[in-house]
Image (cartoon, rainbow, N blue to C red; front, top):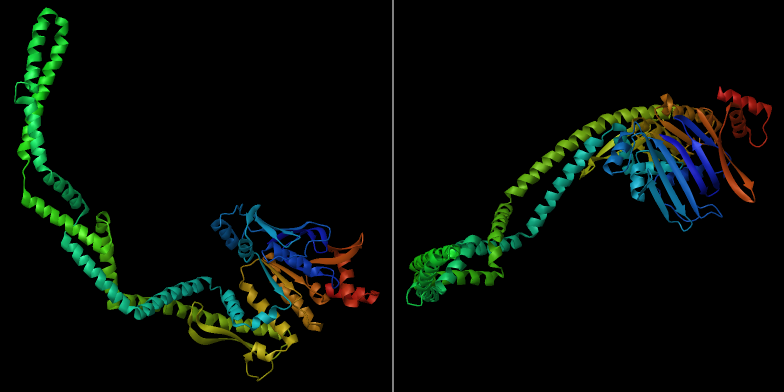
Length: 551
């Protein structure tokens, strides 16, 4: 609920801080005193669009803050968590700063936020109904929203929307397929040809790497054999060979060791070299024996390599990528075959349609049940508002399936006995629309989850005994302190039903008009009701009348 509204340098408000309680509150004052300015300021804190010209003269910016108790507001708490804004699960602070040029900044719990974020969060905090809101009731969209809100069909609506979008997406794919079937066939033919040639290559990346190694070895086998033979010859084949030289070194060092045993370590080294030289000779001979000049095999390998290069050149690919690409081709071939058979998408399309039909039928049934109840409740409210023989009807017209279901919601009314129920915009006059609108709002609002509601002069065109009924209806909305109801009104009969009465006045300070607001005590409240009853001159009779309607 709204706990405090702080306004600084906004239009004709210099500085103002108001604390609010739950229940039914009214705001009254003379025309032009600034009643609607307060609502406009709160609307800005809730994310409405700002404009230039709202900053008070001589100030460089307007600053508006609204604090809310959100302890029991699950939707607001969920939104804060999902959007990663700090929340102590108890209090929420919205702040809006508007500069002279119309630009503004917004904050949620002290953290900078976009206007769209503030507006989205504001939807869970306050509902504002203006004196012209009854015109929106003529729209089918508004009527549907009212019925669904009254019925508490959030989950069902989400299921219908989700299933419709899924079905519609598959439908578009099916339509696209029908238009592009020839292209799909051509693409499939090309893929199958490419993949068939790939299969004939018997290609794997690991095999390709080995093939290149084998080719290099075979291509250089003659040179390798000659080189190895030379190495073996240097090690062991003539008098200047490595083995002969090492042998002489061994004999020489052996003789020297007999003269000086400090050369034993050197002898050990040469002995080790002799062993390694013998091992090297043996390994080179073994390697040479493994070499074989196989021209047939070499030719076969070269043909394989050439076929891979030809394939890659034809399709502008690299050998390193064709194995992984072949897997993608096969998947695409399977997809196109399934698509061209049209069985896959038709099956999915049928399943999606059945799912939508199930959810939309459930929504339709619940709308029918809730529509009967809402019709009854609004009819009762209309009767209280002097439409004694009126009858209200929530009508559901079948329409083409959409994300909102299979029906269009239509509000019908008959205003006298025996009259045919017709759409409200075709039956009611301007004055009647105010009462009808109020009856609809009051009746349907009972299920709303938004804790604070503001009615901005929605009782225009209403007077006499009906005004008192309006006051009692609004009082009933705030009964039990479960909800906040704010009403801006010029009707004393409405104001008298409130639990909290605020008066807005304006005065001239240093040649500048300033708007002020105060919470009235019992004595001040009698005087304000008397002013609303009697105009500028307040007599003892108007005072007594004010006391009477307050009791």
